[in-house]
Image (cartoon, rainbow, N blue to C red):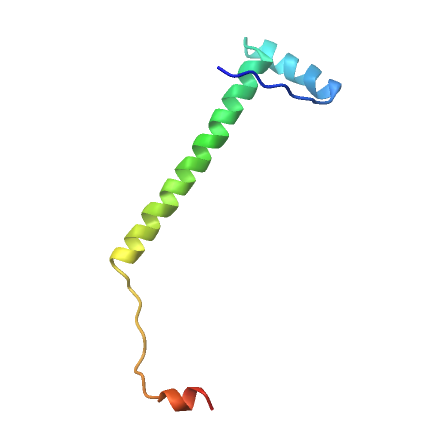
Length: 76
């Protein structure tokens, strides 16, 4: 496991320590858990987006009206 050094405000660290004590854990564990949640949520969101895009590409439900114009008319 790698070490990470953070610089945070003293008052924030004090509050984080209180939360860690209440949860019977450490500030390190709180930070690790938060980072895991953030990265997993990002991965889940990315995977969900990819799944939706694949579904759209595999069965497009796009309807275009009748083409009753010519190319020349478009450039007028």
